[in-house]
Image (cartoon, rainbow, N blue to C red; front, side):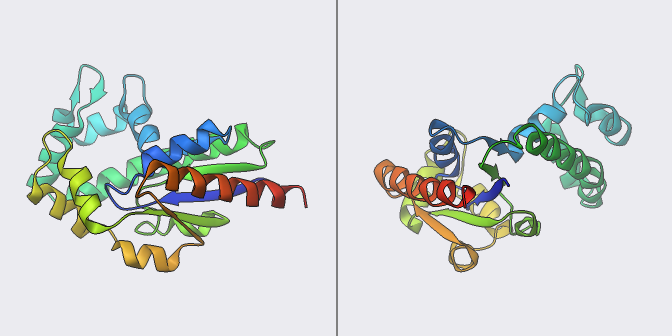
Length: 197
C-alpha cells in the first residue's frame, strides 16, 4: 500500500525546497500549485470554463492569474465560483498522479493550504516545514516584488505556524538546508520501512 504524506507549511518556511529534497531521494511528489499552473496553461482543463466565467482573465488561450486576482478584488463572490470549477479539476489531477504511482511505497502531496482546505483527511500523515518568524519574514521579503503589506495579507489567510506544528505528525525544521535534509531523510527512512511491513 502506498503511504501518502501531506507536505505543508506557511509562506517562506521552505516547503518548495523541502519538496525537492524528497524528489532527490526518489520519492514521487505531487505539487498542487503546479497542478493549477497546468490547468491554467494553454490546453489546460480550466481554461474553457473560466473563459465563460471571467472572459477578461483568459489571454492568448491561457488564464492570466494577475487579471484573475484583479477580477476577484472587484467581486469577492467570484472566488467561490472559480473554486467550484478549479477544485474538482485539481482533485482529478491528484487522482491521476496517485494512480500513476500506485507501485511507489511512499508519495508526497505538496499542498500549501492543506489544513485550510481540510486536506489532512486524504493523507496518512502530515509533514509541516517550519523556521522562526524572523527567518520566514527575511525569506519572503527577499522575493522580487514582495512587500511587507502583501506578506501580512498572505499570512492572515493561513493558519498560524504554531497551530500547524501542533496538528502535524512530523515537523521539519528548515533553519538550514542540512536541518531540512536530515528531517526529510529521517521521514523517508521511517515510512520506507513501514511500507514493507
